[in-house]
Image (cartoon, rainbow, N blue to C red; front, top):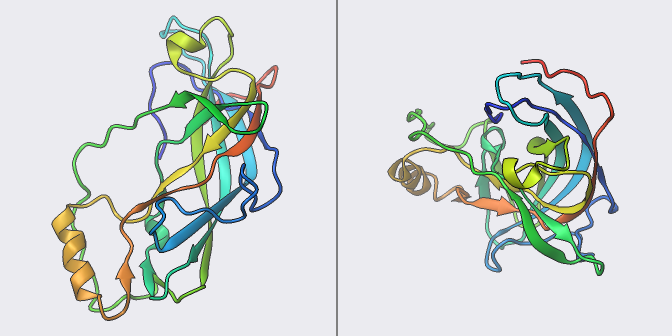
Length: 224
């Protein structure tokens, strides 16, 4: 999922300042709601950056940052959970100012993605096939997903254009775990597959991890 913008796009380098599987609070695995059956931990695998020239925008150069994250999802419940690995999709990430004590400060970035209607219905099999994964209690699923942020290459513009400038922040990654379909479709498959486990159609947020943004002097041009 890429963001479509009228301004130019640039990616910039992002560095994780924590050890693998460590959250900002020092915990290795963090739940979103307290009663959620899943626990999520993330770490940065790689980052890429580019800039798309757009003379029509009339604004500053806008950076496009893609961060590849490694996700480790653990079933912390006492029952089986059904996941759809290919359905996992990054939703809008948020970034916070980094306080001197390592805690989140003010929200500095929160891009909202427009979704136009639900995805069309698909035919589900009678039981979960190899497209799905059933996690027993204590079992884990590991996968990699990319998230995107915008950065502004001119410090005079961030407040106006909503991008981020160089500095240290906390990144909170957010993932949708099931297809974006009508609720009644998902409810139907939940009932149909109930004897195999709990279909997980919620979303997961990772604990914020420290990052540092450093724009390259001459970022490459984005390719679409």
